[in-house]
Length: 166
Image (cartoon, rainbow, N blue to C red; front, side, top):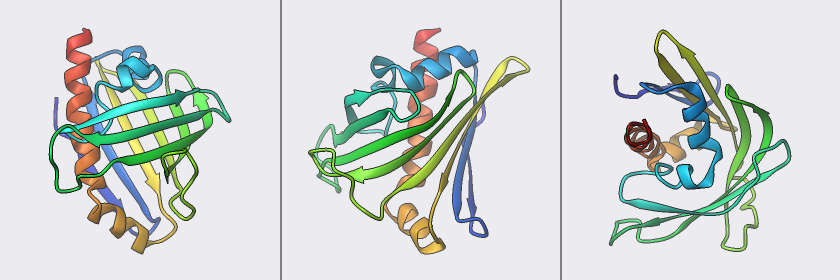
């Protein structure tokens, strides 16, 4: 399967990461919606994810922490909280992902509306993540924080998790 494709759409202030996987859509969906599977791949290489809440339904909350496995230049935990808007199995997830503090409280101004599209055709399943930003400055900041590398690493880890599940 080809590597991830990354598009920075400055006109619409969004980041799009796409990749095809050699797995059925139902299995890809499970990797997005089941905590034990999501733990296997979410986040960049060298980071672990702890999931404290995963209620995949409109209005439901996903609360997580990313932490480095070993000493890292960002030797710090990263907390996140997402609130689901749309859950259409196994094709579409929409949520607002945000940075949070350890208690799960939202860090105001970090909201990133995110859409995940899963489409199975021709023996492969394509996944597209689109993250919207309030402006090009926020898009540039996200890239500077490593979001592009984080998503491409996560997709590599997802491919490995899918292969192990198959």
